[in-house]
Image (tube, rainbow, N blue to C red; front, top):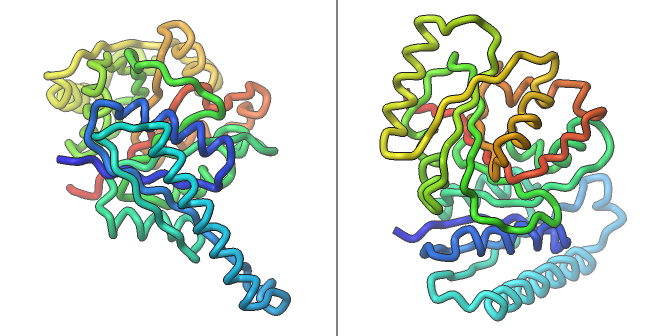
Amino acid sequence: MKRKILLPTDFSDNAWSATVYALKLFAEQECTFYFLNSIVVKVNMLSNVSNKLITTMRENAMVELLDLKELVQSSDPNPKHDFDIILSSDDLNKAVKNAVEKHDISLIIMGTKGATGAKELFFGSNTVSLIMKIKNCPVLMIPEEFDFIKPKQIAFPTDYNHFYHANEIKSLRELADLYSSEIRIVHIDVEEELSDKQSDNLIVLESYLKNNNFSLHWMPNYAEKVEEINDFIEELDIDILAMVKHNHNFFQKILNEPVIKDLGFHAKIPFLVIPESVDI
């Protein structure tokens, strides 16, 4: 089955880097890539913006989308890859949500770029907003100017308190299957031994990954989760970080930690954020 991948773009170098990574990551897979650009005119600007100017903005964006499509087709003459474009007048979150539903998108890939403030340093404000709002599609975030390397090691932090559903692990397995990557399950050691609930959840997780190459790791409990994950990434030469986004897990703790600004955790490697499954 052909994969359908959404690439939100603002035509920046950062967005182009994410596009190049996506094309290389799925070089051997049949895919349709959708380039999405969102044009939004704020309500308080309408009185000062003529219909003619809005039309011009849309026409210019369409030209850029078509140019981008042509550039990709010429630079990536891969018979397994098809390309389409989407121009939306909705805000980015709504535009992405609509595109995911309309085109049955299986993965969103976008660039990240730091700005000011703790959360913005981690992902970039648009990316943070998007990953918090999109509930039915995983998002793979690519750091600015990140050069593609085959992902041989994928880190998957967990506290084992969440019962993982098959749909949540599917994206992780599919990513690992691309290059026979090893999945490193990382547990932060906050207790001497797992509770019965944690042990049961670990058994379920292992059952999902029985056909994948995976290993279990325990990390010492530091004061900051960001520092723990950074250390693990460096020690085991991790290529991609993956997490399921649900309440009260590491993902939420990372976003809320003031230490992020001091550590400069800029998402140094690609980061896959998987939405929590609603399929109980």
